[in-house]
Length: 145
Image (cartoon, rainbow, N blue to C red; front, side, top):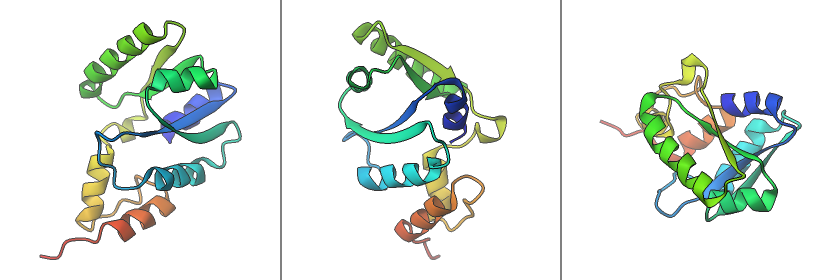
């Protein structure tokens, strides 16, 4: 959300594109993830949430996008994101990739960590909107010892 809020200040229109990716096993369905993103970002007038399946560069081209914004939390993200940006440039030379760093307070966060804290019954409210916290708690019943 931090990156989207800052991107919304730089661009006239920002599309948060929620991907369908069979290689990953997301906790929530594509429709659930879209609904949560819409609710989380509803206060940003120039931000819309959409879903796509397939190559990001093809989706971006269909939408008439000039740039893809990617968040970089840590150096460990950079190598993968750099390779992805170079491949995307090879596939579509007109599409730029812009890397944005999150606020320092969020650099350690990942969906995997948040889900694990929630799964173990920990407090995730500092990291996600209230409706997402509620959805996580409903989906992930804490393990009993």
